[in-house]
Picture 1 (cartoon, rainbow, N blue to C red):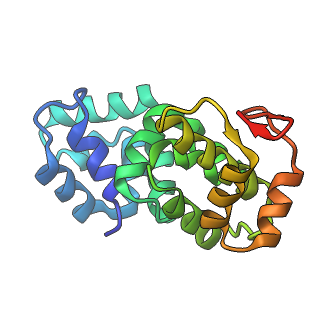
Picture 2: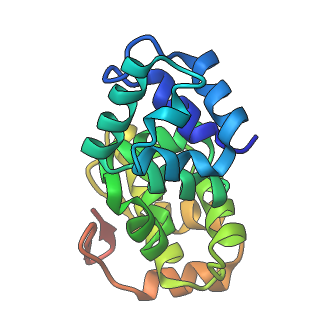
Length: 193
């Protein structure tokens, strides 16, 4: 449902005590997408029709301090699930949209399943199957799985097999391996780290 990232942020914010999931949902149900404008404009009179004046003031102050209301709205519009959105907006704050739009694979840090992020990147952000960001992220994913298994580097054959599982096409594996390193990993002879 629309507004899920905003509702979740309000309900879980320690800066807005007394406004839990029920009241946050009532705010969204009453004002919808205009909730962001009401909060930004500090329209406490209108907002206090749903929550107390004290809570309204705290809510406006919390959003003003964190600068996240537009990021939360954008996360909903982009269809980014609440479980991912909470971490993203906490980390990137007001820069959420710019960071995620520049490289949707930045979401991998907030979602354990690379394929979930890949689907979002391809469907919501128009990332093509040969996009360098996708290929680089796939290598990083293979290396992270190796690291989680206790390996600080992986032989080329393991990287190829992992890439084939993620990308599904041998020509994409070849393209990914042609990239020859990034800021986040390096290739040394027949090993990646």
